Image (tube, rainbow, N blue to C red; front, side, top):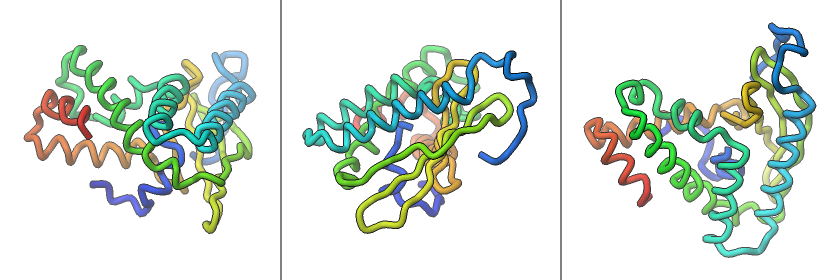
Length: 201
């Protein structure tokens, strides 16, 4: 399991879902995306998350909506590859594809189940900036009875989708890599077994 100090409850606000000041290394005209477009995209993510939280739907309905959001705005294949890490280097293309699909469902269930805990809260976009070949869009999450906390979406320049989230400075990808790695270790490195089991978790 992850050694992250964050509770699952905090990470679950934006999950599957879905750092630092730096100057651009390329001229703005050379980039396929832009700070403004990155912020607009996350504005849409936040709008849809708030809509899910306030929808009044059943847990199953919220999970379904969250999975759709995750696949629409997140670069799921890339996130899955980052989470799988070195263990994915020897995997076949069909295994990587199957893992990405299983991982998408796993993340949607894992974090979507916690959405009901955040009814009455809100998420707001605070700002955006370019960092090398990525963009960081900062949001603030406010929940009833809790101190507000920051969530930063990392948006890829290549396709304008988010590839990570940093909740109070902790990378969701790194946290999930630790947890997925532990699950794979328990299965003695059998990726096919992990893929099958992720569909049930």
